[in-house]
Length: 95
Image (cartoon, rainbow, N blue to C red; front, top):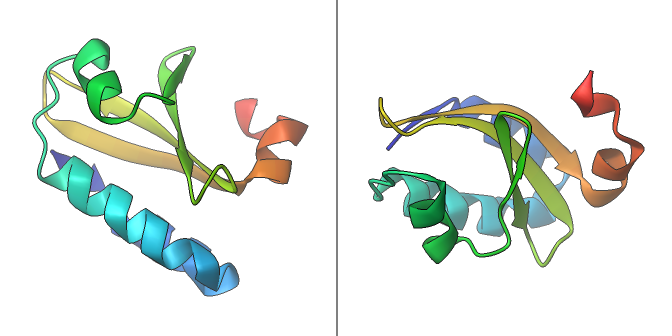
C-alpha cells in the first residue's frame, strides 16, 4: 500500500523519539501489504479499530495512536493524526 505521508511520522518521532522504532515497523508492514478490506487489515493488526471512516492503529505498546484514512480500493493510506495515548483520549482529533 502507498502511505501518504511519511513526513507525519517523521515529525512525530522528532517530538517522541521512542516512537520511531514502532512507527517505522508499522510503516514497513503496511507498505509491503495489500489489504483488500478491514477484515484483511485486522488479521495483521488485530487491535486496529474503525472510528467512523477512519482506522485507529495502536503503536509502541499502546503508547501512541496513528489515525488513518485507508482506501482499500486504491491501495492508499492517508495518515490523518499521530497522537500520544493521552492526546487520543482527549478526543480533539475527531473534530
